Figure 1 (tube, rainbow, N blue to C red):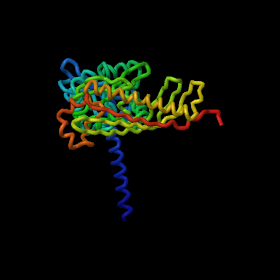
Figure 2: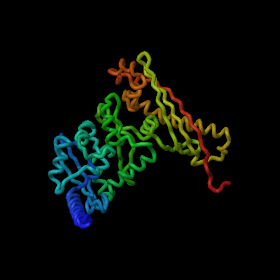
Figure 3: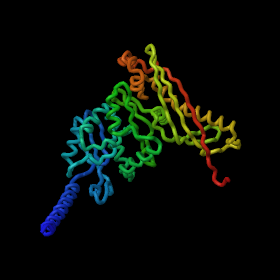
Figure 4: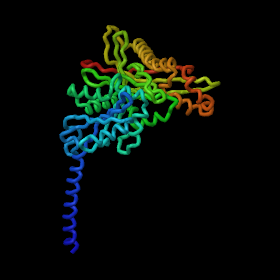
Length: 369
């Protein structure tokens, strides 16, 4: 009896499951899944451009982004109003749930990071691990359009950048959740990677500096590398010495110790790393104890010169690009209360101490016993 009752119920469940699957697929097919969102500002108006993939890009069985890329645009007095205008104009519904990258044009960045990201921070469908970039010297929409004209697959190129960064850095600090958290700390600058385009595609060339959430400047590549070392997120790094020796850093560790006495801030930066020889173009036997000691000192000096660059920038411009406010507060809480209101004036007077230590690990040479 139980078996007779069970079989019709099972058949009904299978039928309903099939209907639900077909309905879900049909609903998904009626949605354009935005893969990259660009935010721009010009003449008092915001433009939001959503890049999505056609031809099966929204079909879960065919994968995301397998078709051609198209762009839909909307305009408005705010970024949110521009997004709603985009949704209104687009033939299909728009979803940001699959957006992996958000590009902010230079003009929009100068209006304030909060003006471009506030509406996204209130969207519960946004991926918190989505990455944020600034497009240096141009609109984000133009950045995308030029890529399409060059027959690039934009979202795949941006994913490739993310993968490259994971090889260089221990983590990506430009995720949506990290940037939103950094924006709450107004004593320090918010640092967002900026993109440039060349013939090979897109490249991260350094950090855009936001002071009070407004774009202030761009750091060059080596200064940005110094920021990554001090932030303790550098995973690997090449070292090029003048004597024809090249090395590759495979491990780094940076510690910051701050001291606040009589309203004088002192920061001690200790960098430890390991490297291996990758190129030797000199006739000198570099494997002797004396030569290895000399190379070790040279690579220490090389890395110190890198970490001194962002320190020099911070002192000369009075901008906390190293997130020192939080470090000083955490390590000197009582004394911090006496300078927190004048922190911006203290930045240029900070004293720095350096300790760089390293070792060169064994290197292998093909063909040798």
